[in-house]
Image (cartoon, rainbow, N blue to C red; front, top):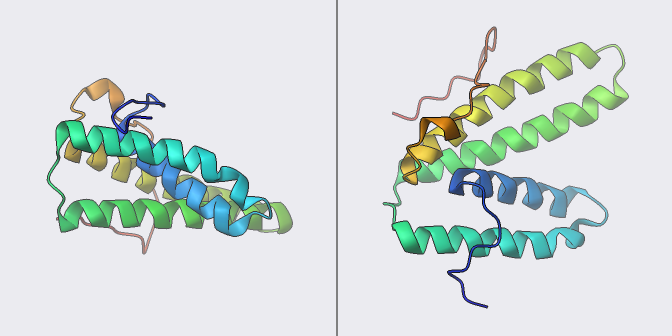
Length: 139
């Protein structure tokens, strides 16, 4: 199979996001290994995009990926807590929603870094109202 053949059609930012989520699943779920095939397809598609577009890899781009992975792990953890902590359910859910706004900000930044300039691709749910202590400045 050629590494330049696309298997999955989302943007590179969405593919990277899904890779971080599948990595979390591989580590935290009992059947984590079952996600290996999907991860391979995602990685092949990212490789195909990177080969085609050859975006500049910078520390800023690496940081975006790291922040994206961190947000996905925090959101995962908050959703788990919400299921077991009835009293704190709404607080966990609100924070997960706010962190999803940061996640979407990172995905939008990655869109630009990978050359996906179409405004229709941008995530619009970037709301972080009331979120304190999670300021992430990429510049």
